Image 1 (cartoon, rainbow, N blue to C red):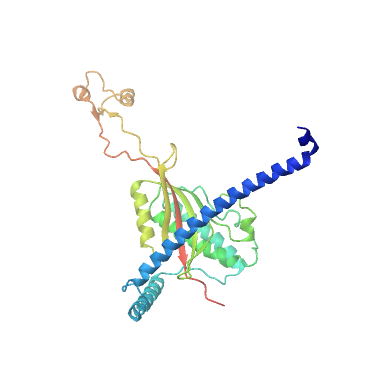
Image 2 (cartoon, rainbow, N blue to C red):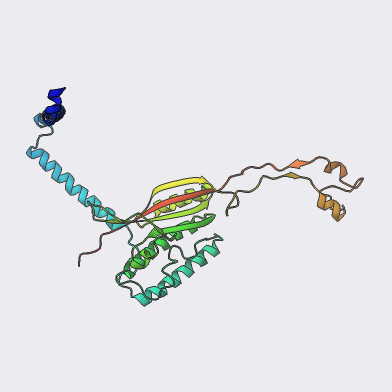
Length: 315
């Protein structure tokens, strides 16, 4: 103990050195094990590559290279034909700000008229443009993009109205201009960015629609989307029972039906009871219940739609 007190610093240094030595040994052992595992994986991968290369059917022979080039040319021809068969969106990419304001007002009014004619309630009268509609001037460079989005919204709403949905609750689009970004908390927007296909160069934009419909109308929506000459497709689909009281709720079950004699008093007719002793009293005692052949409930549908467009021409 006396020696430890006189050489306290030396003893502490010795303890620290031993601790560092043990830690270094553990670290070295763990890294050595990790290196062995990586070396084992590398050897397995190298053996797999050698096995593939040694096969004559997959070796890079002149015949295989020729086949690959032929298939590449066929794929490019197929993609060219597919893109040529698609109908492009009808919008003016060089529209001015003043003309777009007129186009927006007229298009929204037209969509509301179409909804009224189809007797489809629309909760969102501006169809995703509530923050843009009051504006007179728009951010620089945003008008062509907004015109393109407006054409996409008209395309989607046309399909929904033709499919005779029960009600349109919400339609959301991507915020693409500074005017949109100033109101990103609005129900007009979603957070899904555009995507570019690396193989074809096509650009895909997305819209989220929520509506209520019966199964027949939902099937009609999917069929009309598939038959659309534009490159329109359904990426995601969520179907839930519609909440009670929502537009398009299913019909209530029929109650008992009692035939009422035409000669009964008004009060008796309202109660569905014949006049005692009157004509038809015996027949009225035999009550009938209308059979409910179909008691379907409406669905609340949320759908992610993708609109694919050709890449813009290089300037």
